[in-house]
Length: 348
Image (cartoon, rainbow, N blue to C red):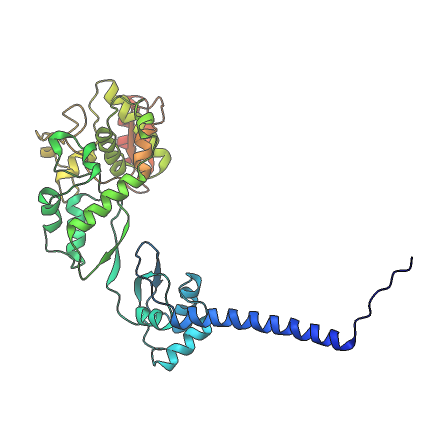
């Protein structure tokens, strides 16, 4: 049996080719229409949970701003963005600062955001800052009047789950639990309470999920004591390994019924960061050279690395350490004689 293949006429080939072209053109039209819609007519987003942070350094030009907006998926086209900016006379009006942008945005709404002075900015709370230092920082930035942050820590109505970790004797002292980090704040509507709640949220989010398991191996297993120890470590040494070694020394001193003997605690109540002979004889419970155990409260708001060091001490034969004045190197000693020799060599 012979198979016959139907021959396609030139007319039919041409017709098929035209259909293919139409499909391609239609697809391009749909994509371009969607592109224009996203660029020009999309309704700006209002959901703050679907937001990105745009950092525009001082002196940035339109091209640099367009690149950052495209990178963060705020706009779909850098070229159209720049054309739109020029047509609106905004090409030289971009502002510097931190912008929180709810997605999505069209070209015009994105332009209005980055050409309007930001109402939201960032404030960085350094690791190891005390509540009083946070108050000083916020005062310097013009966000509060002096003492307002301290007053809020003590007296604002704070309803937060972190409070369950805090010793009943110190319910109003949040020292140690205000997590140091960079926070985005509204300059127009800033309140100390809002920042406190953000810092407590951050503390809870950053706290190692297995902290209870790790703390079970320590002389004191409650989180308040762990944070108290972490706050001392934060102010004593810098590197992660030194933090863990010092953690091992301080926990060993506590376990052996020694005084913890950390000068950082004595400095907690001082502003000049200097210890005098009178301070060493002080009856303050923060004088843990004289009194055994931890100070009555944490002495700083520790970083995550210090919290992890408090939970993961490195055991060693060392009982003593000093930090050199010139380089900050930590020098360890196993005996008091070795320690005294190190003091004479590096600190006098």
